[in-house]
Length: 491
Picture 1 (cartoon, one colour):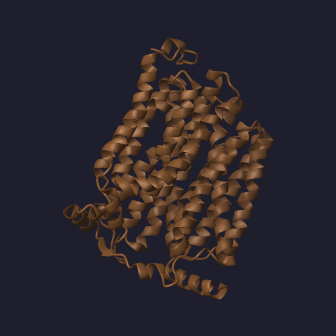
Picture 2 (spheres, rainbow, N blue to C red):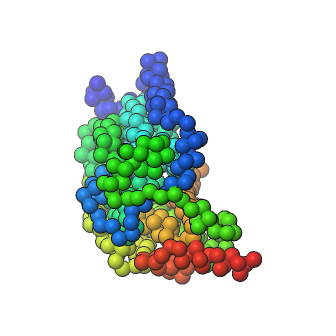
Picture 3 (tube, one colour):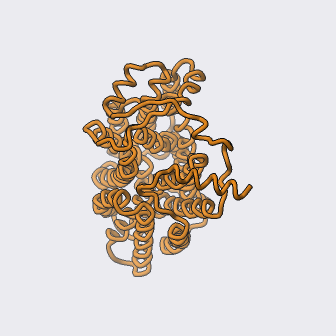
């Protein structure tokens, strides 16, 4: 219907039927969430706290494990594709709405704010609703936000971006939680790196590929409408995602839980509170080494956020401003993501067979090389962006695939969840900082931005090399013992 207007809908009135439909989307999401809510939540959460489900240390990977990794990788690709698409919609929004870049920055800013809320909220939802139901709820929200493809108002796009971000923000923690419960301990690290890395690279490739194929024909709005088929695909994938055995046991669905554990070779046991918490109870994070390690990984996460939600998000608009067409710039970025695909397998192999610490530092080095080549491209004013962007995608996706598993393996049990959550928050914080600067009117050229981002990235490289410790093949209980000694010495 909008073909005659070149799919330009800005300025069209929002009639009552459209406003009513928008309200129904939000209300319908709330009804779906209520319908998924289990009964006797408090009693079931208390019961779940006393259950630990894990696969034996030396168990082999079977078809069920590989199938789960494949399904969760597809789910993460769909999830990562949502915020990655924002960068490819920015040039069209600026052109259609006739607003400056700092106004359009409100769209990714609120999407990122939504991911921060989602990261916190979805962890709670996954424990409350179960892993499978929380993924289905994300899919419902993706389907609902597809209506933004028909919104004439920028304000409604901003509001729905927050909702989309909230749905996208919680998928990675849910995915990691499922894998941690189902995968044997000796395969856990590399499987998290592989699934996380493929999901991140695949999501960016899907976003750039769809933009290259569809946006030249249908305009930027088609990337919002793509939330409908991809959200429904995620619903269908839910049939192949097992429910958490711990969730099922806490709800006395014993037969279902036993069937899941048989498939994955996992076992359930009662948690030993004394063994986990120790005689001294919970301790604060103490020691120069631990604070240095936390600072190093936080800076690494901050640098990733600045690049992924700053440089890479604005790169399509920068290429269009340089004279590239939307289709050509999207195709170049899709080629860069395609080049990055094989390196995810290399990162997983290095993490599991070579070194966890030096795998992370290697990814930081690749990211710095990418930043350097982007800076060189900007200073020269010409050349292909494929190699610089490919190195950036390789490095940043290697970082995000490794940094959270490495953080979880680097801190004692008493502070592990807090440390991992803190580092995860800094990944979003970098993006919020980048978009906040743009909103405030501080418009830095790409070459200046590249140079500034290199500073925290270089500092994180130095600190990770200094404070990081090798975790490959190490019993994590050694960390708890060392931490207790530090706590006693401090006392």
